[in-house]
Image: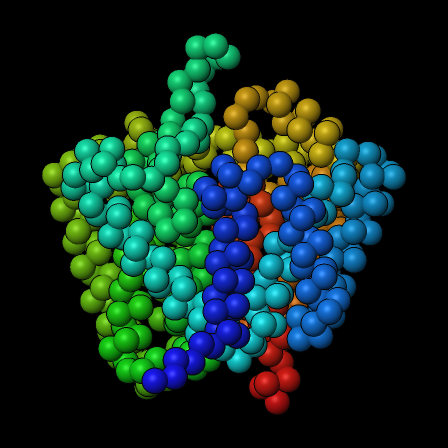
Length: 416
């Protein structure tokens, strides 16, 4: 009996996994630290592109050259911007490009199946550790430090376990983080998977409708169990656009199916709120973050929102005062002077660091293929999802987001 091994499929699945863990995974953050990791990966990616024509893409190469020009120009003009920042952008872009170009025709199916696989595993681990927290101590995965709180010498360390298939983090004991350092990063992959399932269903191939619905179930449960406010806002945007922009008869069954799932999810959330009150998912991730613990009115500055809002204010003030950018050193100094713990808002922070013109050009490079090859409503949804996430996260370019324009450009000849 002859066993056939599809080397192309194995290679692409490995490249997709590598695309997953850059950036924001516990594996990448804890066991391969420092700038050197980006330089090493960049050399490997450049070698692949140089020796394999199928991995080449003019779109991403032009994008990288533009980013390199902006980096050098900012370095010359204001300083504080080095090649390490460009290397991180380059690795995120090239990891997406190479994963797609390995097999353009089968990429989307393999990507969605990979997301489904890891989501199913994460839901299983999350459920077990929520029901029986003591089992974490019996899990034979290596423990590692994730975060230190307090002054030096008196700090308290939070720990994590697992990096390859699932990561349990003490700082988020009842939230599903997948293999990532926080639920906010995990929701990016999950919401983009939902985007693909609902708006690009015609590009996917499932053995049966039942198989498609199972994938929908897993992704939706993954988003809900991640308990990310940004993820919930993204979920609402996706469902809203899907219901009001799809009038075709063939998607009506999917709409009714989704309505049933959403109804069940709402019932579970309200039952959880009725039984656990201030410890419930609904209160912790939505009510408290949007209205504050006092419930006196709409207040996005409560909880972690105050740190993101602070970064937004500093970024906007910097852009108005220095439209050509100030570099990372000056921006971090201004941010630290404003207050400690300020994070995220990468969408505006990029404009403050590099300047308003590079910011507009970079966003144009990301959004133009989406508006060119997609319906206007779908393109606007993509922009809203991008803004929603990058205002809440520390990186501007995530492979799961960049995958959308990159895939559209890479497969444009297949659609003709």
